[in-house]
Length: 138
Image 1: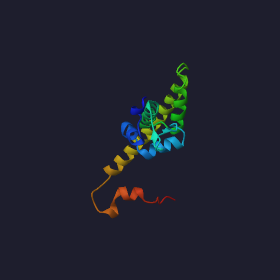
Image 2: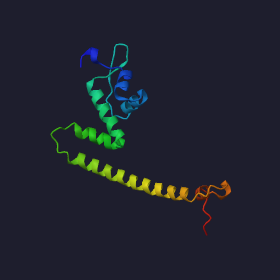
Image 3: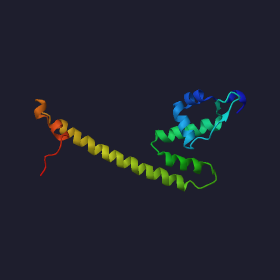
Image 4: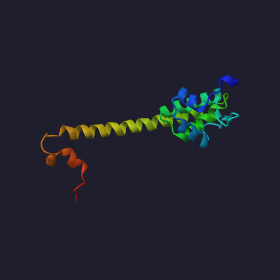
């Protein structure tokens, strides 16, 4: 990338849809390498930063954890390596997503049941409020 193609942090943020503070944080935690500095001590980012940050953003959008992203980035560095380790990470993440979906479906059924029990009376008789309150079990 030539000098005129270098990005400042604001341009990198706009190009990737990432907040400036998030970019700085990714640098602090080691997901994004520290950029070069201009003569005025401003951060200057190149294509490698743009590509890596885009990868991080997409992985975050898919719900991968920071540790998973760190591992995926490390694996991506060795282009000749088998992608078995990548498949394992993605498969484990898919299992987590499936568990969350099942939990959300159960939550939906419970809320739907509570709403279905509503008699549209007074709050004192509200089944939803009652269900949210402390249990009065033995």
